[in-house]
Length: 160
Image 1 (cartoon, rainbow, N blue to C red):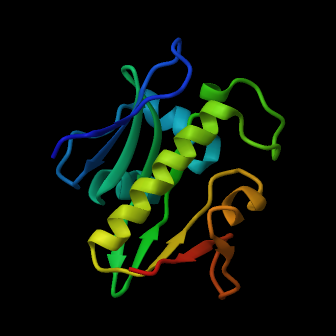
Image 2: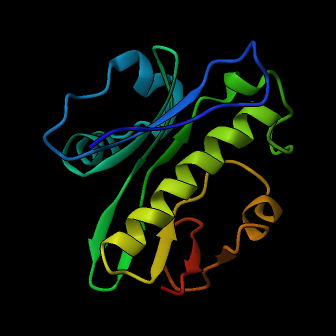
Image 3: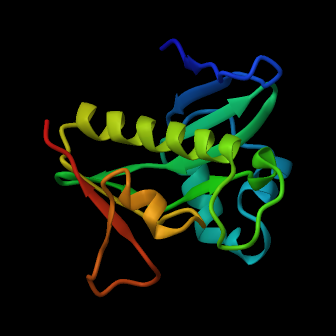
């Protein structure tokens, strides 16, 4: 499969490349994992999913700046892990709006996940959201899930 490349309007910036990898792909480096899932968010369960599940990677130059794991369960695609290197957008306040390059990375991940959802015959995406304001995801059609589950989740219903 040929990777999709999206070029930014800024000539000095690196192009964004999106790759879809199966569970048999080369593992992500420790440096990438620590940057995308900082601190206590890099649990053993997350490491297992990042190793075993298909994933979407966003790459700028030679650096992985975004990753999402995907798992098809009946008619929905679950995305339990979505990590973004927040340093690509410069500094921002915790909980503040993502910066332009960071938005590009998040949008590239979400675009790829939505295409994967439709390609796999699913119509619903359930994802553990990145650390961005909910309004950012709502503009893309996601809404909070009020089911009894651990942590915060958002969903999007796609019409094929």
